[in-house]
Image: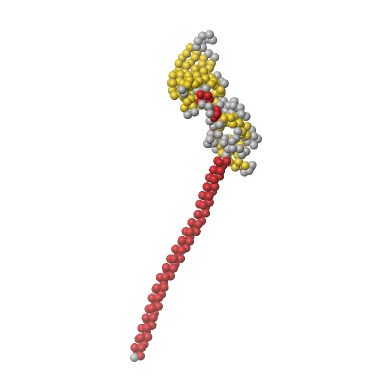
Length: 293
């Protein structure tokens, strides 16, 4: 009987020990899950921190870009209307420049030869604490600059800090035809450049005629004749112009005439009050500008 009791006690102890072992096994699983949860939480926090670190920079870049666009828009709205033809001291026989509606400029010498091309920008100058207009060459180099006096319809430009040279706006973007006159009024008349003379007449029904006499020497000259039509601001001859060479034997005799060609083409354009003859066949007048007589 005593042995039986002893056996029962040992059996109970073994069962208790087995039970404790099972509790330890189950408790290890929640601990592992807890570690995984902690790791996932740490990773999520790191990703959130990284996102937070990037977001302010991206937002700042977007804000700066939006601000720059707003400033450009504001400058455009506050810019003066500079489009038109500007002559030094208001003299049509001096150098001049043309500014388009898109604020692009072309500068000319008095004889009409192009001096430079570029664009105009209104920019803030911290040294004088005010806005100025800068004329940049297409290469990006500064060509000229002038102050912003606040006028929206400018008629005078004073270059640099000294105010010289001084340019006066004589014609709007449409040139000499800004007053509403038609091509028969603004092109028709006599024009000259050195020893070359152009006479443009209007024959009615949209047909014009240009006669050009250019003295090559004391005893010879060229005579060009172009039938013209008005097309998109130009007088155009599309291929039936004539060049005749005149040779003079003496003052009393009629000249000998030699027709050089009958398929000439040309365009006549106005820049301000200057006439340009674009000889599309031989380009003999590319460096010439004609003034009204």
